[in-house]
Every structure is written in C-alpha cells, then in structure tokens.
Length: 246
Image 1 (cartoon, rainbow, N blue to C red):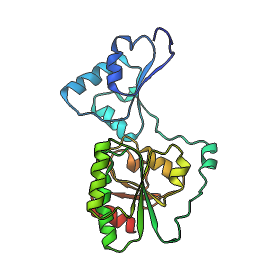
Image 2: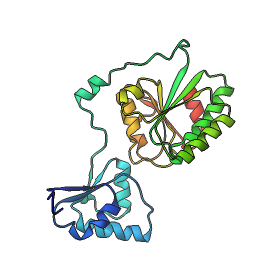
Image 3: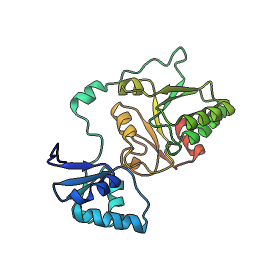
Image 4: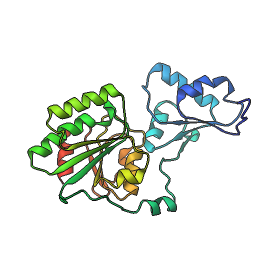
C-alpha cells in the first residue's frame, strides 16, 4: 500500500480483507469472493465488520450474491459481475478444431478439466464409467489437471480396481484451452460441492461443447439444461451415466 499506492484494491477472500482491515478505509476496496464459508456466528460477525469498511462486494454469480445476502451484506453494497467475459478475438480462436478420436470414430471422448480434488466429482465419474462399461458404451475419459499426489494416487488405484485403466487417460496440467477442448466431445463437471461459478463450464461452452454438470452452486447459471448441456443431481453416478448415454 505504501510503495505501490493503488487507486483501488481487489481482495479475493475474506482473510485478505481481515489482514488489511485497519487500512480498508484508506482507499476503495472491494471483496471478490470465490468460495462460500460456513454461516457461523464468527463469520457473520466478520462480514458485518467488513461491510462497514469495504466499498463493495463483487459476486461472480447470482449464487454468490445470495451468499453475501445470507452473510448480512446490504444489497446496495453487492455488484454481480459474472466470470467469463469473452471478446470477439477469443471466439475466433475458439472455433471448433477437434482432434481426431483415432481409428474408431464412434468412441465418445469425455473430458473432466481442472483441479483434481475430492469436491470435483472424479469418484462419482469413476462409478458412472463402470455403469457405462456395463452398458457397452464405447468411450474414453480424458482428465486434465493436477492435484495432491496422494489423492491422485488414490484415484489411480480406484480406477484400476474398477478395471477402467484402459479407458482413462491422465493428461496432467495443460495451459492451452484449445488443446484441452479440442480433444473432447463432452465436458463433464460432476462437482459434489457448490462451485461459485464454474469457469470450465463457461470455457467449454465457448468452444461449442455440451456440458454435463451438477445442479449446484453457480453451474445452473451457465448450463442451460436441455439446450447447452444437461444438469444432474450432485454425487449421483447413475444419473451422470444416464445423462452421458443420452
């Protein structure tokens, strides 16, 4: 604050705001929250104190606006500015350029993209993949992203035990969106906890891909059920498998 002397400060979580609490009135400061916290007495007190100091709260989705309201923030201090503003240059770059699925043109390429963590629904997808195999669906799962090594190894063991090693491809972290979305036919977001927005769903849609996502958090604001994709019940492997089969 002393050296850079910003005109406006954007804070990306309430802990940052708490750390800078004594200086929040020295210049315009806004909180852009990307995760819901527990509605506890301590957190309600925190948000009341922040509301008295901050210039405003930016919600990345209607879902996060509702969260701010639940935490006692006045409507006049909340501005909804949804993630994912794409300009014309982006859409030109995102024209479909699908990589060939290989000799077997009928194989369905299912992609799951982003952090590899328990809340992202990889375990639900493994169970859904077992059901698809039992039904004779020809598919492969292409997983982009990275995560804690212990959890990734746990998933690998679960995939092997489910006899899915032959259909599951780990791609690791990939920076280029076109490389990611050019290799899949359907983007899956089987999140088991609420996403504040769901940027992957917005990106996949911008690349012309249908998205199958959990009906929680901000995802229903991105995926138009039956139009741009399908919404399913969170942590419902049978429902996820059925949506993929459709």
